[in-house]
Amino acid sequence: MKLRPGIDLKRKTDYIFTIDLKVRDYECDMQGIVNNAIYQNYLEHGRHEFLLSRGIDFNKLTQERIFLVVVRAELDYKTSLRSRDEFWIGLNLERISPIRFVFLQDIFRSSDQRLVLSARTTGAALNEKGRPCLPPELAILLQPTCK
Image 1 (cartoon, rainbow, N blue to C red):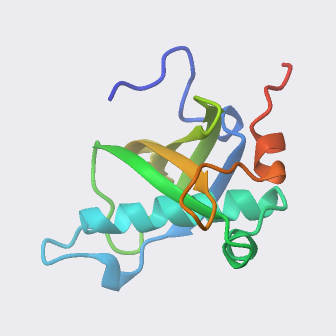
Image 2: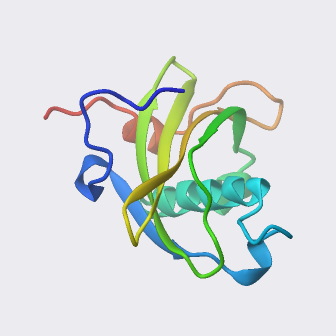
């Protein structure tokens, strides 16, 4: 996966949402680096916090039998995080079809602003019968905006 051209990805202002986090000791493997699977947790946490910041409660949607699901995840690892590293996640969101959307997320180590990971996570919303169903609050969020 190539970095998105034309954007200085090291600035938080290039994203519609950012979140700051810190590596916890138990997230590291025997090599002393963050286990590769943990990055998926970081990215998911970032997506959930983004949705909450826009008034969309993942848990409430689930209770209403609307399920937000990941249908594809692409992660490009660049360098590793270690215990107690502070980092931030930048997130952008795009609609790629009438029923699918993609979260473009990057993780940067805060101390040197080095890109740790670049991810593209494609999602969809399904009703309880497994059929595509985009809830109105998410449809509004996915509307194009003028710059």
